[in-house]
Length: 306
Ligand code: ADP
Image (cartoon, rainbow, N blue to C red; front, side, top):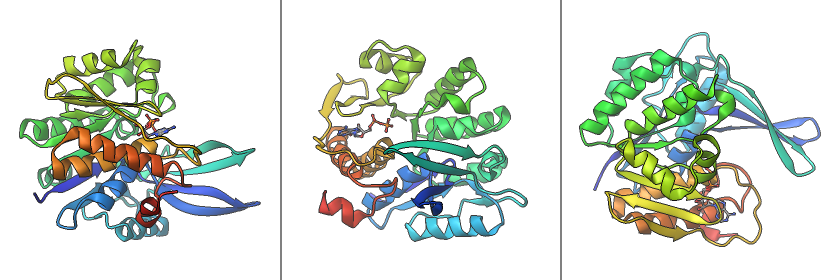
């Protein structure tokens, strides 16, 4: 099967401490990371595209060049005069990471401002990926524009994939956060939440409660991730199945564990059709990713293992 995957969201400039006051520049963001891993594992006759908005400045040019270099397509990325990409800085102190963000005026906040552009990109795709972070950065009217296009895609039989990726600091209030995440799920055919987030914010008592809540919203397929334990799959109304995580002796950097799981799962499932086999492959991929530094681990390193 040949197909087209589109991931929608915000890719940011990442500044990481290199040596003393020297900073190293990179680019990352949950939905872009997922696109990166999907691109690594999908065959060449599949296209993987990213949809966001960037500015017309030099750092926007550099970000697009970086995305292109990973093999992810930039043809659906809008340019917005006078804006720049969002930026975050990783601080390392005694092995612990903390983050500062500059994203309040980021260009990506306008990614859903042009409904025709959005519709054309979605109509040209078979699998569409977005997240709770995608929704969190948008104004309420832009959330509605995006979700109405995604509902249309779901109704047309496309695979609409949502990772709730709940980040309370990106939302003004809890009720809006939970309502909007639920609306995102309703527009989707596959939801891939992390259980610890769902328990903390929706108050789910166990994984079965998370599955039941998303089923009640009309989501047909659910993959609940639970860190070192494993994932529970509920596909097409069949009895839930559990796939354990791979054993990791020494975790180096958990950045992108969930995103790499999502990208590897979607690639494998698109080709092979079996969600259990896809979850096994994705667990092995995520286990390898967390044994390396950074969000975007090169394929050679993943294949070499630790
Ligand atoms: P997120 O990064 O979104 O919070 P999780 O922590 O649930 O997501 O992790 C996503 C996936 O990464 C898990 O389903 C698992 O495959 C893998 N993973 C995460 N932590 C570990 C770990 N300690 N050991 C092995 N695999 C892990």
